[in-house]
Image 1 (tube, helix red, strand yellow):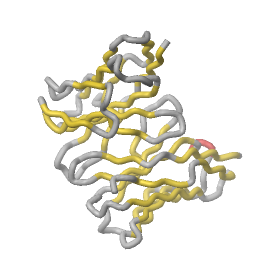
Image 2: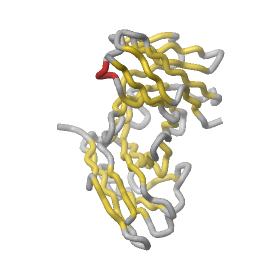
Image 3: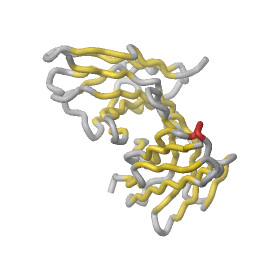
Length: 114
Length: 111
């Protein structure tokens, strides 16, 4: 089945640690995105990538880093510089430059700082 | 100019009633307006979407009404069911290929 797989589903981070969230898609989509969701808030864009080896900052990129070495993979690293990382993180992908512009989302990773 | 404003924040509807969620935008470069449905602990899933060249789109019990001159669009859920209880997000996409989301509406449908 085609789709987006995020792992792990739950992640706990100690203060000062970097952690990496995985996002893999087998939809052959060019564009991939990372969003952060906090209770009662909408989805805020962290980073997005329209093509391999290229990515752009979203609205809340500080304290996060990404890479796009492969078309199907877009991992997100939450660094120790992110002061309030506890949130629900969502990865998405879409066909870039197409009339069919639906974005497909993964099931999310819930990150908690302990 | 990049914002999408969504209201209400929460909505309680009786079974069989009509649920209406509204969104407004400012950026006239937006050219694709989807609505997403999200259940607790899950990722959002596309419900229905519209382009600004049409004023209405209907899929089953779900209808998007689009007012280009007012830069507003809304989601109507007819014959609302308890299974429709979820959080709904409107969104807009521009030429940069980014999806800008509204802040969400939590819908509760009571039997």
